[in-house]
Image (cartoon, rainbow, N blue to C red; front, side, top):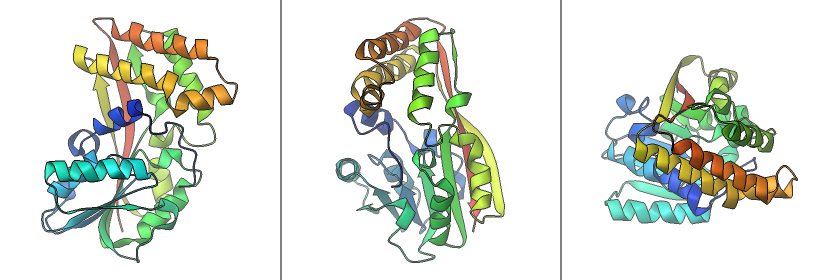
Length: 264
């Protein structure tokens, strides 16, 4: 994939990714799925969304692709554990998909385009492998649109650092999706928005602890340290800011996503 994946595949990152389901991360697509469809899931990660999508297209198949052997192995284990038999997993790059034109009824990509240097080129490639009348479904977060309560200088510094580390990509991808999809040649498009909201005690504890670990031990930390953007002490302060935020009984955090459905 033509990008530098800042998050990496540390266990804290994979725990976050395995929380994702078709219901909480691809709900805008689900009403359009039908039995027998062939679906390509780009950047499938550990496969939780992939396996869910496969249950929605009985008699069809879902091909999950990623560039990491590690996460593809986890996705394969998950499919076996859940007894989902219509999933295929392959190592592939979205910029050069190893499939013929018109191979799929649906191409889905969740939190992928924000990490690419050429997101429009990726959408063009996804369009190429869609059948006439097929559906493109893309969803990405918009870090600039994230909001939280109570106010936290530490979380502001966390976001500022994230935006610095991803400045060569598109951390505000959510707001750009409709433009990219149209530039890639789609004319029949519907742009919407979706959110993840963390406010219940269990949810905010999970969200904060995940990020507290990520800022100190994942590739996020390595990029910050190697690039001279933060010290280990400063990263520890960011981790504490996440824990302090979660300790408030009225804590609330929302992740805003752009979503686009487009017909080939």
